[in-house]
View 1 (tube, rainbow, N blue to C red):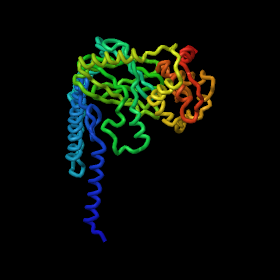
View 2: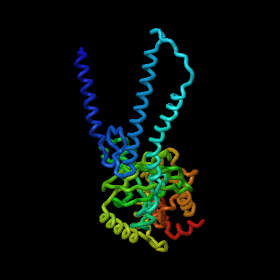
View 3: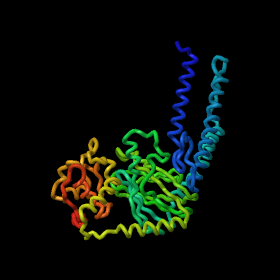
Length: 389
C-alpha cells in the first residue's frame, strides 16, 4: 500500500506539472492582459496615469480611515467592556465633537473630489483633436471610419481572426497563441503623440469601446453619438474588448489598436488609400460567376462564418444557409433584403456597411456553395437597386 508521504509527493508532483502546463498555455500579452494581473493595466496615456494615481490615492486614504475608525471602535469596546466594570458616561452633546465629525469628513471628501473632478473633466475634453475616428459596434465586430485628420476617408471593419474563432469552437486551445481571441484582421491604426477623438455609436445593440492601457471606456449606443479621446505616448500594440454584454458573440469582439510613429502612420495611410482605390468597384460592372464566387468566399469567411459556420449548417438558433429555401430561390431580392435589412429581430444583423460588390459576391457564393449549386449569380447592380427599397 502506498504510504501517505508518497501519495502527497505524487499529488504535489501532479499539481506542479499542471501549473507548469498552465503557465505555458497562458502568457502575458504585451499591451493586453497579463497573467495573474491584479492592478490596473500599465498606462500609456496621461489620462490613464492620472486614473492610476487616483485609484491608489483613494484606496490608501480609505484604508487609513478604515483602520483608524475600526481601531478606535474595537479599542473602545475592549477597554470599556462591562466585565471590567466600565460604567457608561452620561454627558450632553459636545459642540466640538459635532463640528469635528462634520468638518473632517467634508475636508476628506473635498480632497478626493478635487483631483477626481480634474481628471473627469480632462477625460471629456475632446476638443482640438488631431484625428477623429467614428467607431461603430456591430454584432460582433467593430467598424472604423476616419472622419477628420490624416487618413480621412479610410474605412474598414475589424473582425476576430477566423483561425482563433475556429480554435475556440473546437475546444482545443493547448497551442493557443499569446494573442488568443485578441487577433483581428484589421486593427485600428493611430499615430503616437497625437490626440485621437473616438466617436462611438452602434448598429444594433449597446456595445462598449474599452482599451485599458489608454484609460478609455465609452458605451456605443444605437441612435446616439458619444465620444472619448486618448493620446498614446508609446509606440506598440494595445488591446481591449467590448465591455458591454451584447449577445452570444460578446466574447469574440476584441479591440486591437496599433500605435505607429508619425512616419510609419503616414506610410500606412498612403497604403490604405491605394488599397481602397483599387477595391473601389464600379457597381455597373458585370461579373463572371467564378470570379464573384471566389471573392464571395473571402467575404463569407470574414463576416458570416462565425455564425453560419464554414459549412453553412448554422448552429442552434442560427439558420443554415446550406439548403435554405431563401438562398436557393430564383428571386434574388428575398435574400438581398435579408442581408441589407437583417432578420429575426436583429439576431441577423444588417450588412449595409459592406460594399455592393462584396454583398453581391457573398450572396452569389452562398447560392453556389455546399449543396446549393444553383448556378445563380447576383450582380452588384441588383444590390444597388435593392438598397433604396
